[in-house]
Every structure is written in structure tokens, then in C-alpha cells.
Amino acid sequence: MTRPWFALALYAVYMALAFGWRSLRQRRATGSTGFRGISGPPGSLPWVGGVLFVLAILLGVAAPLVELAGWIGPLVEPGALVVGLGAAMTIAGTLGTLWSQGAMGESWRIGVSEAERTSLVTRGPFAVVRNPIFSFMMLAALGMALIVPNAAALASFGALVFAIELQVRWVEEPYLLGAHGEAYAAYCAKVGRFVPGLGVGVRSPLQ
Image (cartoon, one colour):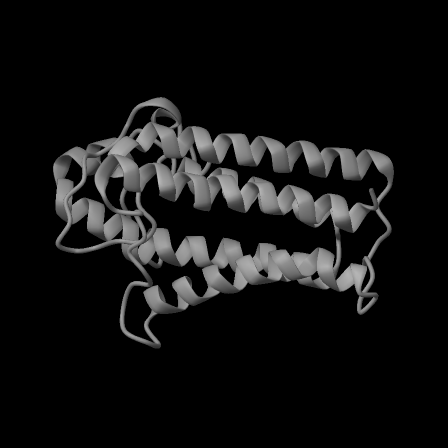
């Protein structure tokens, strides 16, 4: 299997498990797929974050396809060790995403509904970082960029990181603080945002 085909297969498995399988499981348990859509009015920062998230997914699919089509090539030809490291990161990111989604139980969703009140999850990977799903998604995306280090893959990773930052700071954290108050503030004071020990505490979106 060539490198782009390998990357495409890994990406397909990731999307099928993290979004398809997880949504089906959520629907069976709660009657809802967990999708809440893009937050905010068009042009707002939350809306931009949602659009960038969709763009990141599309670019992730495109990255191996454009190499297979011969439209673009890798910026640097990766060696076997780099490809192996990328594969390990992608697989670890996939497994970590599924683990984190499972830890959320019926509280799992994609997006936020202001009228909805879910439980504050602090167990499992959430005891180490506040947003482990996003942390593992970024790990998987970085792994993909190592396997197919072309402009599309790098753009996908950049768009994903930016989208996650906007989603967490402008949507998730304000919503959770409003929903759970002091309990969430106390949780934030002890647990990092994406990496253990980093981004501790509730700050304004620009911090």
C-alpha cells in the first residue's frame, strides 16, 4: 500500500469510528445523534470555528487524494520512521478519541445547545485534561500530516487547531461555566485545557 493510500485508510477508519459509530451508539442510547450544529450567527467567532472545523475535515480527506491524483506532492519526502511515527500518532489519537467519547457517556455531543444541560464529566481522561477529545483529535491530525506532509494536510491541521481554540474558548467554556458555575470553575482551576498543567483556570476568550 502506498503512503497516500495508507493515510486515506487510516483517516477513513478514524472518521467512521469517531463520528459514524459514535453517533449511532449515541442515538441508540439517547435517541439523538449528538450533533448540535455550528454555534453562533454567520460571521461570529463561534460560527467561524464551526466552519473551520468542517474545512479541516474536508482538507484531511483531500490531503491523500490530491497526492494520489498527482496534483501536489509532499513538501518533504517522509522516511519510513516518520511515516511509522505518524501512523502511531494517528492510531493513538483515534483510540484516545474513542476513549474520551466513551467517558462522556450520554453527555457526549458535537456542538452546544444553550437550552441543554448535560452532566459535568471529570472522570477518566477528563481528570487529566478538560478537552481530551480535542487533544486526541489534534494528535491524530498531526500524525496524518507526518504521513502525507503536503500543503493540504498542513492546512487541515492548522484549521483544526484554530477551530478547536475558537470552539473551546468562545463556546464550550462559557457554556459550561454558565451551566455548572463554581463546580466547573473549580474543575478548571485544577485541570489543564488540552495538555496537563497548561491552560489551568477559567479566563476570558482572548486569554
